[in-house]
Image 1: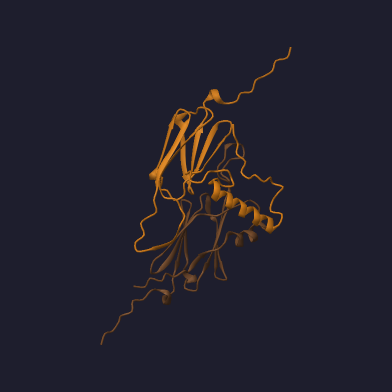
Image 2: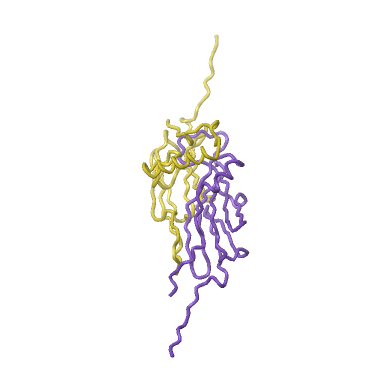
Length: 136
Length: 152
């Protein structure tokens, strides 16, 4: 049994992405909570991004860094006055460093009910392999 | 009526330099860990976060409940109070190992009391992009009315 997990996805510190974003786009920058899990064939990332429409979601991959950015526009109409506010409208953003073990061409993303699901398939050689021990 | 300020920093204080912005984030995350209160004023662990607003004819309650099936959401109204409850479950994944589990899971329930009454029979609920929006019509008596001033 192979116990050594592929540490293919690592969280990047928020400051790495924040400094590049806040200079170019005003508004609140939000870090979406994520679940990351792995099976034999792929790594899956789930991210909560409520209020993001599919057209306002951007998935960017370069230099082995996967960045998800989603803009959640305020839902309030122009005549509405706040009574109390607990969450801001803003831009969700988070970055992950991918190892070379990910087949970057085969990444799939779906957005449903405000949850982004990213499937990052492993390349063949990164999959665990059972090694049969021959006895003589 | 309490209106919570979203950011304690006014619009004029928008990231003077990356170093100051970084320092601010570090301080906020430290305070968050110590007190459990996030920088935007919401309390960690309260789910779902809600925004309430009003215009002349309606109250609007919006709750962030991403990834919940509409069938798993319950909305009930009593007098001036709106209650939202439900269950958030991620589908069981077979044979996976988790690296990170930050998304909240399980049953939740929360209620808010509005400043005035509303017409409970005409409440509308809408679930789009993970946001539950409730539209609560104000009764005729609660709407503002323009009073004509007579002059002699």
